[in-house]
Amino acid sequence: MSNYRESQMRIDEADAALRDGDEDRARTLYREAARLQRAFVDSLPLDRVRTKSIYGLSVATLLYRAGDLEDVERLAHQLLAEPWLEAHSAAKLRGLLNQIWQARPAQAPSPLRRPTRRLPAMGTGSRLNMPVWQ
Image (cartoon, rainbow, N blue to C red; front, top):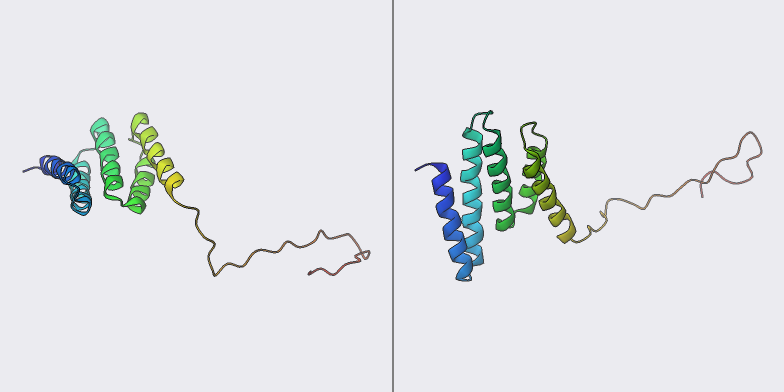
């Protein structure tokens, strides 16, 4: 069976699992479908621009449904860098990235980073009346 057909079966199974309330199973199946569709896209020749664009977007959407947001971001950026990506798919990928970024809570500052201190403006010549570091 082809990767495409197998992925469609996994999507159908995932949708059924969601209807039954089994979110973990659905996420696993969406993830498998994404892997299969990615293999399908990778197997296509470069001249199949439309098919690669549509199924590349589909892979990102399946990863989103699986909850693999970092993988979605990585893939979306990879696809957006491809010269063959069609404008419609590029716009949808950007929309997906925006959804992720808006849904993600603001990141807490790293404990390793200290707040930066600004140096005071420095005067010219020898008329400097304040210490350089405050």
